[in-house]
Structures are given as C-alpha cells and as structure tokens.
Length: 282
Ligand code: PDD
Image (cartoon, rainbow, N blue to C red; front, side):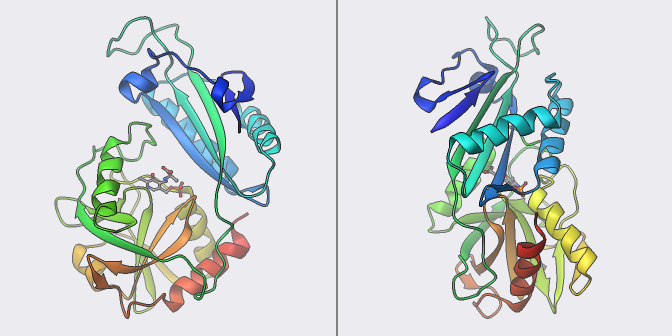
C-alpha cells in the first residue's frame, strides 16, 4: 500500500522513522482512525478537530489546516484505490537526539498516514449483522482517556484479556462500578426502549461515531437517549448492549461474561438505531 510520511507518499516498505522518535520511545503522540465507505469519509471534520484538540492538550505544534489534512487524506484514498478504507492518521512529537522526558524544543512532529481495508458499511439487518461477545473488567487505564494517545498499552491489555477468553471486546468499569467504555469502543445500554451511554469526561474517549449517532438520534426524536452514569447493575440487566467505533458503526453485543444479553438475540432498538445511522452518517 501507499502511505504518507512527513511530506510525501511512498510504498509502505520505504517508510522509515528514527528509533529516537518519541512516538516509539514514549508513545508520545496522537492518532485518528477515519472510516470511508465507497470512498466517502465519515465525520472527517470532527475527526480532525479531535486530533487537533489532542495535539493542543499535549503541546504538539503542527499547524496543518483541515484543508491540508483533507488534501493528504483524499490523495491517500485515491492512491490506495478507494472503496472501503480505514484512514489512520498519526502525529508524534518527533525524533530527538537524546531520550529525555521533557518535551524537546525545535523538533519537527512526525506525521504518518496509511489506509487499510475495512468491511463494508453495516446494514441494518439482524440476519447479517456482526455480533459481539464481551467480558468485563476494572478499567485500569489512566485518567486522561479523553486524549486519543498513541500510548495504547492499557487498552491493548484490556482487549487481550477479553480476546484470550474468546471475546471480541472488554467492557470497562471504574472503581465505583460505573461503566466507562470498552478497550476500543464507546458503550450503550438499552432498557425498556431507552438508550443510555456514559457522559463525556476524562474516563472515556469522545467517540466520533458516538457524536454522530447521538446527533442523529436526537434530531430524529423517535428513540429516547440519555447521557448519564451507567452502573454495572444496569449493564448486567440491559435488554441490549451496543458498541460504537469508526470500524464497527453501531454493533450489537449478544453475550456478556458468558451470559446472554437480554434474550441473546440482536435487539429491535439496535435495528432502529443502525438504520438511522446508516442513512444519516455522512
Ligand atoms: N478506536 N473509545 C476508545 C478507547 C477507542 O479507541 C475508540 C476508537 C472509541 C470510538 O471512537 P470513534 O467512534 O471515534 O472511532 C472509543 C479506534 C477505532 C482504534 O483505536 O482503532
């Protein structure tokens, strides 16, 4: 595949960065994943805004406009043949000549972008929807989960915990047994037709799929949705549980810790929500 590194496009095998890059040594960087279906980007503006906010929060100075990102991303899509692609964007603080914790001055950020194939967009159809089995554990990550940092070891370890038990996500609860998110997705519960998802704070990533979904649901008005604290008890007794992320859209969870969620089938509220998301996401 063709990737972008710093200021040019090249085959992936030719892309080389310094082993002194702080992204490599410290996980000192910010990233994004933006989905494209049939070459159409989903949530481009909000994704770039979140990345810029992340860079502001950690003091990486890269003065690229949204238009500049758009040019690079459009070219990357074109060079990789379009279709259904995830676009990965990564800005690290850059390569210093020494390893020192303090942010260096006069170091140019490293910018890296690549495209990878993703499955076709979800279809609101219970017969073909991909379902998820999850387990749960205490959220042992840091208290800055609103920053989309490339330092993902905490998330990776939580995902691996579920993966080794045959699950494809892990739900995370804080020390008060309140739901935060999953290792790479935001989480929702449905009870008696009402959707609830944890509020935005430092315990979760402000997901762009979450942003788009809540916007669509609020504007449509046919489903009731609440942003509020969700307890472990509510998760265990939910009729439906969903995950959202750029690579999953709205995804139904049918099993939690080896037990059926609701009746163990994909729910009707998921069907309605994914259907609204499918038509409104661009
Ligand atoms: N993950 N929470 C976490 C911890 C995430 O890593 C992600 C995204 C989300 C959902 O955010 P969005 O809707 O903007 O994709 C929530 C990406 C896809 C990843 O790391 O691959």
